[in-house]
Image 1 (cartoon, rainbow, N blue to C red):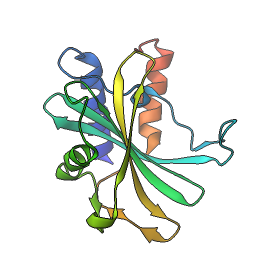
Image 2 (cartoon, rainbow, N blue to C red):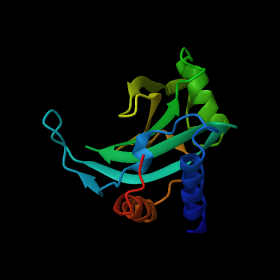
Image 3 (spheres, rainbow, N blue to C red):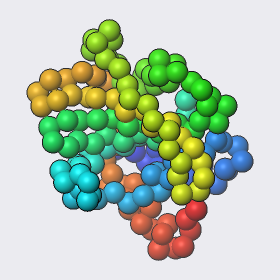
Image 4 (tube, rainbow, N blue to C red):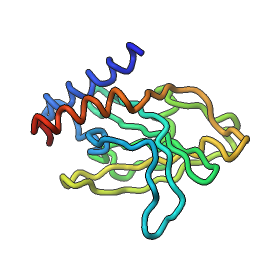
Length: 165
């Protein structure tokens, strides 16, 4: 459990030194429910399973979420596009696997879905989506996810103090 508090300390460091790091996705500031009841266009609930954060390069933080819906479990990793705007799928996945965030059980048969999106602050991120498994089939292993409760507690306290970006 001590590891989760080290990860929260990393988020504090990113927030206190924005000029030292590339942007981190604003999802890192969110308070996550255990379950998202869906949207108008998507009726199946999403279950938020865990999160992780760290640095891929000296100044490029990532924020990763593990979530599930409709029998599918996914990892979504958010990485700033600054300086790597035209990175290929293979390059981005290699950054994540080289960091030990996950490992494909069958590297030849797996791929990632990469999208770009802009957050509420105008920062552009890659959203790297990895299929962890469907029902009882597992496609990746490794990495570490942390429970949302300590992160939610920290983010809730910061919002109540009015200390948010």
